[in-house]
Length: 239
Image 1 (cartoon, helix red, strand yellow):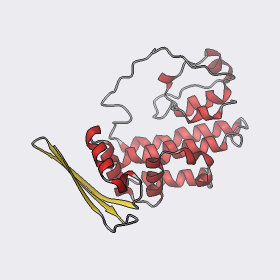
Image 2 (image 1 turned 180 degrees about the vertical axis):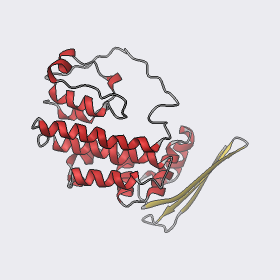
Image 3 (image 1 turned 45 degrees about the horizontal axis):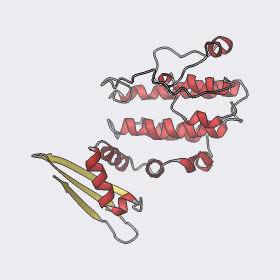
Image 4 (image 1 turned 60 degrees about the horizontal axis):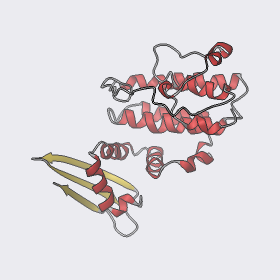
């Protein structure tokens, strides 16, 4: 409770060793059969814990499954995020902790609702009605979320994605996520050779196309209105 910054860490249960009494004394439980059950549980326990310690030992081996939530193409199930967040925020309000941890909860909403969930849905269905619902939900729960000082710690790429999502430039965000899926060597060349993209000086990536022909990557990236150029067109070919 004295280190609220811990609430900004990943809520995944595999990264935690909880004291059993936290569950017994508080009645907090992982809800069954819903997505994001870790989000509405771990963040409660962090507020209740009196101390925290780091365990350097490797006690868990992460399994990257093809049917995991992050890879699941059933976009409708992302709506369960609203249930999880309602549960979480309701618990904080009922226990008189909402105002105390307002900024931390607001940042969580940005990270998990606006950023992570939006990108996850965009990769499958850029026309999904959930995209506007995500924005509306965060705005309703935290009307001043853009003034949250924790947003200053967002990475430059996340600040850009947040800005584009607020402008509802969903196609652009999808293109950015496509860049993230490129092989690391290709992505590195794309962002280092193209100085405007690297410095985050563009307003919008209008389109990204990519192809691999006989082992050669061809990437065409349209950039709009950098400080020095208008409608810059950048082409990158990597053998």
